[in-house]
Amino acid sequence: MIAPENQQYLCLLPLPLTAPGLQARLGGVVCKRCDFALNPIGKAELLPIKLPPYELPNPIYLLKQDLAPEIGSEGCSEYAALTELKAAMEPEHVLPLVYGFKYLFYLQAMALRCFMLPRFFYTHDVLDLKVVLQASRLFGSLQALPAKALVNLQAAAQALHLTVGSSLLARIEALPAILAYLKAHDAPILQFCLKGQAERVRRLQHSLDTGSLVMLVDGSGLKAARCLKLTKMQAQLLTCDRSLQVRAETLELCDPLLIAPQGVLTPPRQLQLDFSIAKVQAALAAADVKTLPDTTPPPLEAQLWAKLSPAERQEYLTTGTRNPQLLDPAPLSASDFYKELFFFYQADNFPQCLIDSELAAYRHNCRILLGRRLQRYVKEVQAASALVREDDDKQQALFMRIAQYPQSL
Picture 1: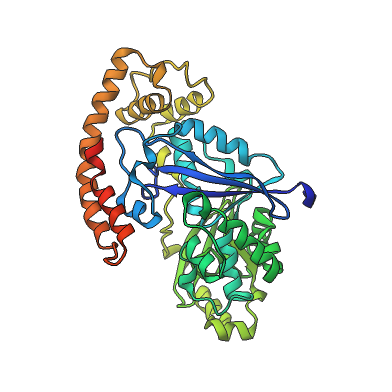
Picture 2: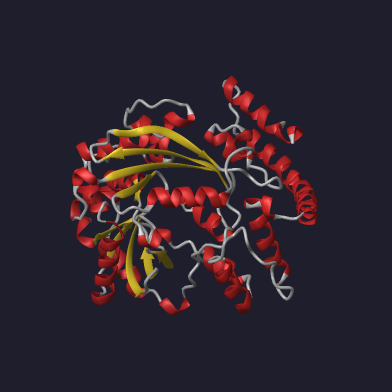
């Protein structure tokens, strides 16, 4: 147990530029350190991450976050950003603090592109304030808060009447402000969430051993679940929501959701939430596990592994242990997919290590890929136009800037 006087919170605001998946890209991460009492340690800083010259941001992501399209034009490489962020998050006394963990997990896609296995979050806890706030809506002091108040960090801060600036660096101040609010109003729920992965595993193991139910709060909904299998990194679950829809799901143990005992749903809460434990138990008992397909998307690591041959997987693991600036060429026998993965790893992160012919090939490939991305970008701009409010001059100006961005490349 870390002594409170030594505990630090590392507030992180990832800035996603594309949809999730193996090709997920961040434009940067805003970072701010606080001590246990939430006093700032230094100023908020932006770690910008440069988009490769063949990638374009998604206009909808830019518009929703009020981000300039040029945010990905400068910054460090993904390899350099990962090295810096891992060093910042790794010490035991540092607890990463986020709002909506799925965007922080874009770092896993970055790691895989940099020939690193994304295992950091399996060994280090993360506190997701969106999960804590949702638990407070369900079981604590925020029961009158509408669900839409948790849609994003800015909406949550506004719903709690917290004053936060609108600039990029100011937005991160909402994280320690929300944490301070929770400490003052829902300390028991917060402390339960702070128990982290060890508590999640303990609850799941008890469910596996006894067949008992646990309650899952993931920041978007409430489910009851029974654990069917537990490994070092995953749990296989049978889940049921308030509509009595039963699903087979796979849970990554590093996901910072809340797993609580069934008893948290007292009879009054069951009535209030329209969530009947008796009906849920009956639905789960009637389900045929063997006929329920698990529709959970596989982890990114598994998605990449499926694209590689056994020999390429071994080569991938070996490459990740070598000095990235002193690598031999990819094996001639490797697939086109692996060769491209390897080539862009070097070219995107260490272009100074390429010879002239490789640089020429990189520029040629960038032109071809950018041409393809431009066609998609035009369609995404059209989709983003539906989000622009006619009475918001600032948003309209940003949209025009986004729409005209490719002309500046």
